[in-house]
Length: 84
Image (tube, one colour):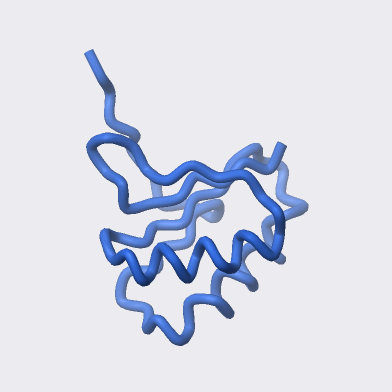
């Protein structure tokens, strides 16, 4: 049996639904800057299914050289970022 990942909205999650593409890089950069010293092992960025939104998030994550996974089988619309 495969379980889907349930994302809870908390301070370690950035939801980009409703955000204009031109604002994504700045918001992700700000979120990562605040969270890199957080006492957590993972962060989440919810993108929805927009490939353009996901590409913009990937570009910003590459600046930080962070490892990440994109979603799961049931919900590919988020990034799980590893901080450890």
